[in-house]
Length: 336
Image (tube, rainbow, N blue to C red):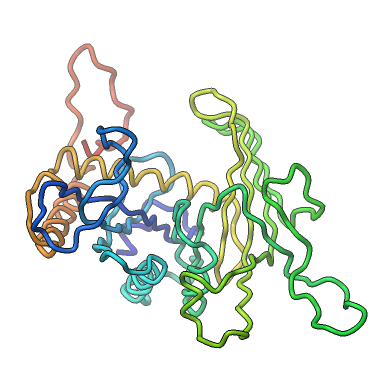
């Protein structure tokens, strides 16, 4: 597994994995067990964006640079009613155990990239004892606090545990960034500026994942520190001006490599190409299966087929018609 991924990465970059969920729709299978309502972006009956079916969460190895190839390494069906943070943490733990000593000593800890919708702080707490890095997109209206508390309060009462307030939506934040990376000229985004603030945390509530941390009513909830990363670009690939700032949350045993972080998050979108190939061309969701166990077996069969295609991508050349554009020399075939 390490060799299949390391060939497509710089020698000093961590192994990069993307995590995302997609739906196996079964709207007409009323007798199929354990169906739930899951997100489906192509629902064509009004404003609804959900469809009955099974939800599968995939973990795929990502490459460095522009590519539509990934390496699926795990796919699990998320049972209805399960805690998404615990399910994701278990999946990461199992993969880290499979990697074992495969990760080279020269490489940092493996990096797992997730999109907005995953509990970044809760996931960092669930993986606190594991040598992995997580990079999660966070909403632009979140509020964080400095890890250094303010001066001692006069009089009785407990001192505050939260430091200076840091609003992502604020036009001006008083705290200067701890790290700054400027890439002056990129092909698709022009000038890229990446800023990072270390030792930041949120105020967590005793709800959802954190409701499982004990029944004591007055027990103090943990403070989970990480790094808040801001990414600003000059333009989008289609030439438009960006209408919002990209915010990321990093947690791990070492400080983040900002150049790796912003590039790795862009590579997470390569998973969309894999989902499209699986559904449109390999027939993942075309199989009319009744039981979820059958869907799991069918998923792993297609993963095995996809890996065979990935291994053979350098063994064949593209046959273009005379009026079609010639492929770039040395560029492998796309999955399609």
